[in-house]
Image (tube, rainbow, N blue to C red; front, side):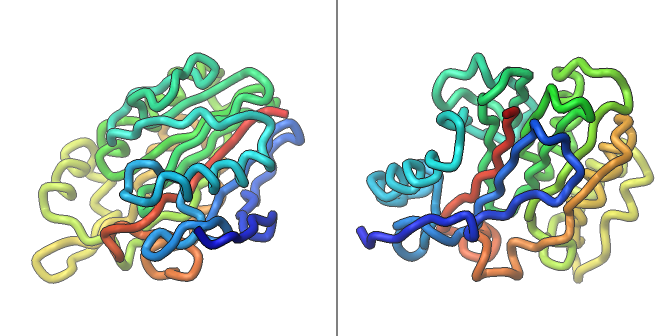
Amino acid sequence: MVKKTLNKADFIIPNWPAPPSVKAIQTTRNGGVSLNPFDSLNLAEHVQDNALCVLENRKMLRKYLPSEPKWLNQVHGINVIDAAEITYNQDADASFTKKKNVVCVIMTADCLPVLLCNKQGTAVASIHAGWRGLCNGVIEETIKSMKLKQGDLMAWLGPAIGSNAFEVGSEVRSAFILQDAQFEQAFKVSGDKWLCDLYLIAKTRLRKQGVPEIYGGDDCTYSNESEYFSYRRDGITGRMATMIWLE
């Protein structure tokens, strides 16, 4: 194990007008102790990385958080859990909390991380939004679970695979367009496949749920190898974490 450090400079702090009580961190692949191909801040236990390296990476991350993150076993579904009630690695793809110092977290390596908070700074959520989750309604389920009044939320979209890199089959495009013809604009022809804009789909779904204030959504994990893990690019790779909590 190569001893490395983890500094605040290794994180992305979401640029959005969240209330002062809302804190959030997006990790990159920088910092940590994992070796190639997980170099170096892999936070996932399920990707064949050395377990001791993952443990050390999580230990270093913990220094910047008020409590241990509520890690999930993500299954590309739409199950949403109250983070304060999570037992370790429960199957879910989103969590929310209205309690202080409870850290909601999801992990990604191309899928879209979505953070939510209300304007009063009393509720937050983290969402793992791959194309299956987006199509099946993980954003809608999370907002429903938070039980807040319409128009009270803002969102931040973290780093995900960009619209020039995320190639999908016709079945993916059809699944979205059958729900709403408006999603046709999120797909461009790429040979016999389609390029899919996850950011545009997420923004459309958020706005339909009464979330007009949407920030972020301008990065690509696939094309930025020095900063981000990408499953589509590398196959065997690590995972980044997107975390939010109330102070």
